[in-house]
Image (tube, rainbow, N blue to C red; front, side, top):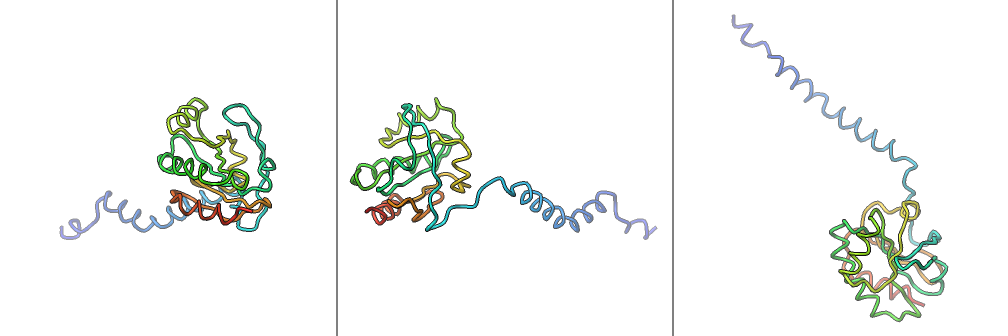
Length: 182
């Protein structure tokens, strides 16, 4: 009888099995995620890289390309209307765009993963005063955007100077933009 009392129940056996195999399951999930994402997202641009070219349309229907800003420093910000952190950061970038000499620097944004009506409502609500471009996934991928917001500082020569991911204090972006100005 004592032997029967010590034998594990089915639930205990399953629990013990899972305890032993948790690390294997976790490793398989990580490996699966890694293999799934191989080749899907370009590596992030780094300091000194030539910024990937783009030609996008603004909310107003105007075509914009990176070449349009050649000779000026650019703060290129990727964001989405559903992104809470973006909602906090964009008004300070709007303020920054009024503080810099437009002949030397510009703030440009690329709205990604949002419906056009949501982008219009958001920009109107926040009174954004810089170009808001509609960006397909390919542009985000070219810049290696993995989180929103992402701001890339591009020098007047078209090279990447610095990249900020996540919420960034406007002063940091402002200092980087001013340092990149001609």
